[in-house]
Length: 284
Image (cartoon, rainbow, N blue to C red; front, side):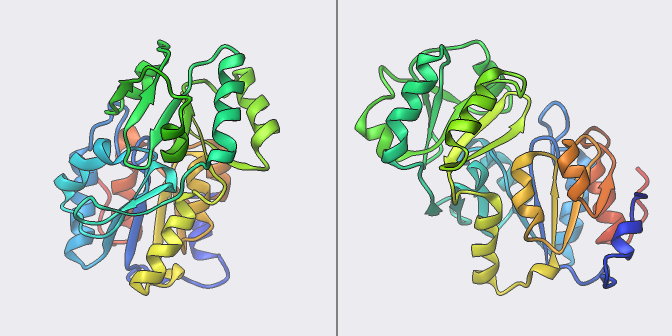
């Protein structure tokens, strides 16, 4: 469907000046292929802020990894991290977290290890631990995450604090399908990139975190714009009034989007904001 055809034919015409909140994914959407914030995207977000439109990052990143971006954009609203498992305030204090749960933790870690893989455990505070290194973990470090070596992750401490269990595997890896079949009915299993396979509590989604924030801020769903590219952004699209996918998104995201903009490499986010939110020319 053409860029804004669906936008104009959704049953009710959305006024382009009605939006109060922009909620955007980070890697693959806001940032370019080198995990950098393009100047054009930054300019578009700051222009939204200048018009009184709030900005929320909804990311799979941890608090520490997203900290520089929040500071650079001077964001004051609550921010969603760890794919919805943790919400933080403007002081980077955790205001809400949803943990995996001890009832699942040990069995899941053992199953993963038994099949020859090395999981990472991300705690509610955003610290990421592993006890057996695998070269694929370099993909996690490449997007600004720090991983910490532990003697053993199968402990009561990690079971009580775990917010996300991650395995750096591709979608074609047999473990992907196996874990979805075995645990998909019990836990939230999402993919946010080529090597980003995450397991969370069933209620730990970006969409649920956003709903809680909207309730607190008193903002209706219809006044929210969501931007994303990966499976963990689908829950955002279920909440927002207008959904925008960058062209490099997974097929299911493209299907659910009201608008498909340019790729993250070509400042698709900035172009979409200027065209559909700020109503300015999208040329760069």
